View 1 (tube, rainbow over the protein chains, first blue to last red):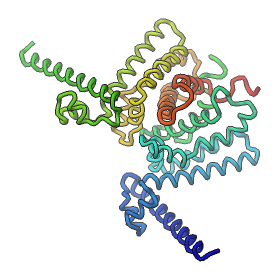
View 2 (view 1 turned 90 degrees about the vertical axis):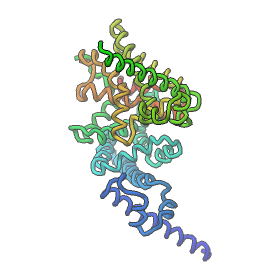
View 3 (view 1 turned 90 degrees about the horizontal axis):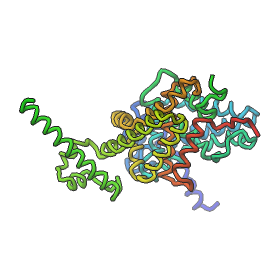
View 4 (view 1 turned 135 degrees about the vertical axis):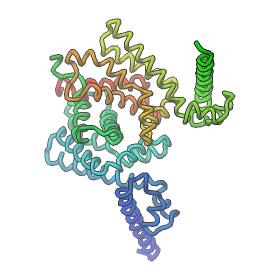
Length: 208
Length: 208
């Protein structure tokens, strides 16, 4: 390795460490003071960087949350792959993924609405960035693929579109739950919505 | 009638006429120059009122769109009531409503995304106002009620929640369609999504 590469990879590691510090400080501040109540200046001050440096790492405050959301999605994907490899039926894996996400969501209930809004940001560039950072529909697709291959999923819509509809429903139900609350825990609310998307609103056994 | 009442009802009528004028001018401007490209100042100038007067009638620009959305919803509700009274099967009525909405939406494709964003506005007050101005889930509930009474709808979720899920899906599919486009017309996209919610992602006839 040349000295140039050494110093450049050192700079890379320094940048990564600084980014991790800013990220951890920001998430702590969000959890303590709420997302809306925490400013970029607060985060910069608490992580000992200038406001400009903060914006070099995260062009907007919501971008910090996208890192958090990506992390959650990665954990879900790993869980899904592990369970499928263990031979757990796809449908059970999907419900387990849903439960895990709803638990995290209910625990960090202030962090999820700004994440969901970011996915629907009127600025298409930001919406796309958020959508790519939060590939929930890709996780759903991964889980449903074996069922699709077995011919158990309807084929008039592509698997990707079906996965999008299921992931979008998660988003909307979570937003309603955060904004208006409900007597049911989020997990139960989510299981019911997932059941509706998988099985349909119409009774399978016909009219009683 | 006393003279006081006369003058007050005259003022009311004047206010209504002015509101209608501002509304019509604004919608025309939105259609010509886009919603984002039209400012409150543009609307005030074109309707010969001051900016302050505009904000007396519409506290924010999106509020004009809510009047437009309310009108669309009223037409859908009337159509639904009329068709049900004519004895058209509820399921056909629902698809007709969906087609009508998708046609309007595709025709005025620039007006719908800001309306959808308003329903999901991070400001809960504004989100609630938008939700009440756009009672799509109430129209869905009205159409599904006869089926619900006949026992053809699943009962683990309330009819209201099922109607919310269907209306929310309309919103998300329309947003995706506006933002990313698709090879399919919005109407077909919407019919497929509605079919999935009614019948479920899993094949009814079991694996082939």
